[in-house]
Length: 305
Image (tube, rainbow, N blue to C red; front, top):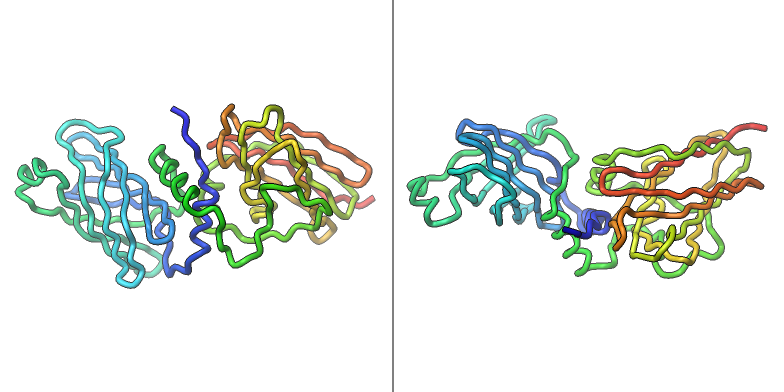
């Protein structure tokens, strides 16, 4: 089943609102003496992801909730099963965020959601404790669909910086691009994927021009590009029109790891891009492919003559 996976735009909502705490990450702990996990993607005041519980089999279910930053309370519920064994039911959650030293916790109670399950459990909630074990997350179709919904509602993201990419017209004068730190959610998504090195380019030029097109049939591919982990192109819609940026390179800034990340797979998977790199008199033509697990990487090194 095809689904869009525009994580990038939604993740930048984290920059639009100042939060004291970003719950995005993987949380593990215990519920009723059994192992459990909560995976959260935090956007504005909304959290969505999935829960995973063991004990008398296992249960993996989609999760959605709201986080109140003032009270540090997360209220949520399972919306549907992903997979399970018998004797498991959907739950509702009331959790409170706390931090002890460097450790972050969500503690509270989980209770049965349906009437039948409530009767079976005598309506008694179960104490639950989660500890954040990492900031990165794995993803599901539910997470992807939720992010697409946010993308449709809000196309323009306030990041506190001037928008550094135009998805409509190419930048004709190819300015030297200004890089910015990605939001925690965006960084988490990038780091959850591996990067495949396509080529290493060595040059004596003091700048390179990077030009992007769609590679082949125009099918709605969008990409985000990083330079040494910083955001330089945000959710660019690839087309037959060139999109150009220039990157300064010198002795002090001699290595540039350029990573191209797929925001979606277009109508013809995988996400494909044609990248033309102009470095002095040298010209490099690259055909890049990326998907939801692999980024395409090109390294550029400055060398003295």
